[in-house]
Amino acid sequence: VGACVDTISGVISSATIYLMRNTPKGDVRQQTRLSRFVDIDPWPSLGTRASWMSWIVSTMLTDGDGNAYVLPHFMAGEFSGLEPMPGAAAVPDPVTGYKVHWKGRSYEPDDILHFRINADLDNPWKGRGLRVRAERVAESLAQTEALKASLSSPKYKPPLVVMVNSDGDLSDPEKREEFRKQYLEDTDSGKPWILPAELMKVVQVKPLTLTDLAVRDTVELDKKSIASIFGIPLFLLGLGTFNEAEYNNFIRRKIIPICVGIEQELTLKLLSSEKMYFKFNRKHLYAYDMTKLVQMDLTMSDRGIVNGDEVRADAFMDPAGLTEFRPLENYIPYDMAAAQSKLQQDSS
Image 1 (spheres, helix red, strand yellow):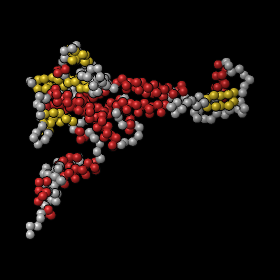
Image 2 (cartoon, rainbow, N blue to C red):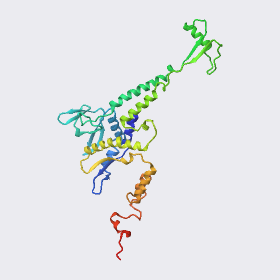
Image 3 (spheres, helix red, strand yellow):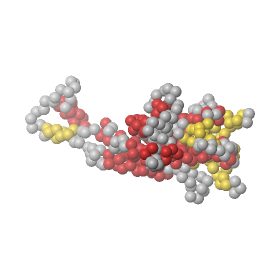
């Protein structure tokens, strides 16, 4: 369960948050004090965007049961901090729909950032988490782990059963101990026992193995159940091998929906302009093969869609001043397609 939560929160918290603006020529990235505040330092002196976002996502997936609350602070008319609210709880309210209680105070929905996943059926304003379903499987995994630990303890190490041909009374503990010291102990470790023939027979008793108890199958089944609940590829939990298509499907189906909810809440509560919005850098969420990515960029570069520095950026190279869009000479603009000589009719 922890691996699933850490994977999802780690992927989302590592993605850059862009501040975007609508323009007549398309949406462009804005680099302002507000964009830096949200993307780098939303929780001044106490954490960066990575730790702040990791807390939000982890809380929604675990103790927050689908919800995470953040309290904005202001100074001189600007945002000065976005404080996480661990332990905050929302309760229905007949006037505003709900209120959030935290540290003895009550907050209106518009006064806080309320991040959520999976709308609750009875209270649509509240998120619905995975905690209840995950806890049931986690209990099964915990029991299996306890069984493994128990079987691995010295108490369950394979014992030796010694069957003795003796006329003596070995029901007496002192006589059994005397017999054991006489025949079965040796001061030198690893030195073989020398036993009188026909005196005794030594048998090793092996306990049931983890395979016999189907512990391995149970663990794999529980891991698959957890992976299904969280939407995590099995190879991220140690089952199977890495699959690029499966990982990218995980990004599209699980990560992107959570990102959209966070983007919309940040946009709704932090921005007043209708032409601006926050957006995660989706490109770096996916798993790309470096060769395929650069080859795709080079193809678009040949057509003047991207410039040289954009290609270098995807290849993790520094800019080189290649900011011009340069199509190959045999490419012509769309509006000049009809001017090709091969399409001109011979007037003679």
